[in-house]
Structure formats: C-alpha cells, structure tokens
Image: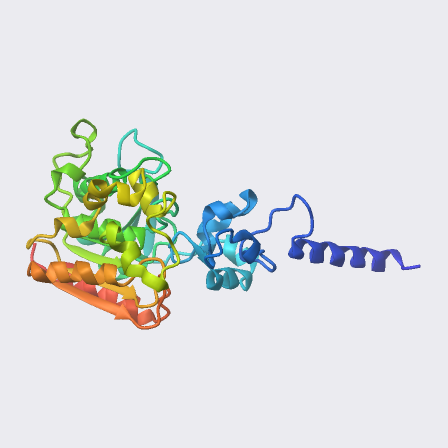
Length: 371
C-alpha cells in the first residue's frame, strides 16, 4: 500500500496529465497550451484558428495568443503561447518608464463601447508632438487596441494612440471607417489638451487595420465616409492624415480571390468570408459596396506618403493587393514605397528591421515636416 503522501503526489500528477491532454470533461483548454487541440478546433482545416472556432472558455485568451492582431491564431502563435509561462501571459506588459497611458478614452460621446482609444504620452515635456494612430487587424470581426506595437515611438518624439472600432458583428461598412475618422477628428479636437500637433497625424495598421489606414489615407476628401451628419462627432475637424503605414491590408476586395490563386487559403467570395461579413452580403453580389470600401477607389494626387509592406507568402491577403494600390498611388504622382518581404506570410515579419523601417518612415514624414 502506498504511503498517504506518495498517493497524493501520484493523484496530483494524474490530474495534471489529464488537464494537459484535454481529457477532463467540462474543462476548457486555453489555446496554445500543451495539447491545445489545434487540429480538432481547426474546423475548416485552413491551418489557423478563428475566434469562433475556439471553445467558449478559451476565447478570452484569443487576443493574447494572436500576437500579430491578424484575427487568426497560427500554429507558430499557438506554439509560442504554449512555450511561455501562464503567469507571464497573464501579466500586463510594462510600459517604458518615460511613458504613461490613459486608457479607454471615449472618442464619441455616448457612443458604442468600441468607440474607445488608449493614448500613450511622455511623462515629461509639454512640447507639441505628432501622433501615430495604431489600428488593429482581425478581419474586421475580431481584435482590439491592446498589444499596440507603436508604443516605442513615444520615446522617439511622438504621441501614440491605439483605437477600437465597431466590428462587423456590430455594424457593417462603412461603420468601421466612420469610427476611424471620428477618432482622427477627436484627436484634432483635443490636440491642445494632450500636446498633439494636429497638423501631423500618421496612421499604421495591419491586415484589416491596414485596409482602414489605407482608406483613411486615400479618402481624406470623401465626405460620404465621414458618418451621418447628425451623428458626426467633432464635425468641425478634418479626418485627413499626413502619413500611412499599411501592413498587408486589402485594397480591392473584388480581386482578392482572383489574385490569391493556389496560394490562397480563404474563399473571399463566400457568404461568410470576412469581406462579405464586412459588407453585409456576399462579396461579388455587393459590387458597389465593395468598391466603396476599397482604398484604391479614392486615390488622388493629394494623398499623403505611404509605406506599404507585404509578405510574398501571405495566404490570406495576396501581396498583389498591395502592389495594385502602390501602382495607383504612383500613377497619381503620390509618394509611395512598397516593400515585398520574401518568405513572409500574413504578418510573419520576423525581421525587426521591418518595424524599425516603419518607425523611421514616421520620423521622416511627420517629424521633419514644417507645420
């Protein structure tokens, strides 16, 4: 017969093993931990997990595992989460000591709960600074303003804002760009309070966020996308931006399937695709809506400088989506740099130089301009 202390240790080991294997009924496993059941959760077998594919108890950790804010969990992200301690994942990343944050500021009075932004500011200094606005990805149906990659810009002379916007489950297009424009107008209206240079606003986003920042850049003169006149917050302010960094964002929704070819892993024309959900109906049956949502539709010669970055192995948004936008901008004599990253998938930019180049783009376009 086992001694009581030995018996207790054996029981504990068995319980731990069962938890890790997912064999205990009713216990929701956290995505990314050992035996995360990646393949069993991947219902459509596309090699990635959407929020909807996760069990209810696991969805609360989705944004922590989705490190690139693409709206999907890749195997690499799953593995990285498994290899990190749970305590480390639950902790809030520390800000640099020189940076303070004001969270969950409403940029539309009495608006939707998603009408909120976080503002990262220097602890010292009262000089007016340009602002860079981060707009998250997630297929317009997931994602949040957390995990903002632009925070280091505060120590390089900027204010940084990270915004939420209504997702496609809350409202269909143009609600998303209406919200982004409302956030830009709010920043201008409150520039004096927060030490913001209202004449120098840059935007940066990835995937669906890349689409929205590109649309901000090309539609600065499009009143139709500002929102309903009666509900338009800070209507006396402009929503124009002065610099755009677009990471792998869609630019012409109608061409996404055709361009993807054999590389693509999503049927963008399907009724339940992210693009169709954004528009409120099947993509190819909503041609006018799709054109209205396309940044390429509004390109004009007065658009701001663009930096566009895309991986040539992107299976969700083909790199030609970035190519056609860059071509249209060049044809209109706009300042645009297109960088195609060899071997990179959807947001899998392992080279830190890509982020550094994005930082330098904002320094060049916003810090050196004369107001």
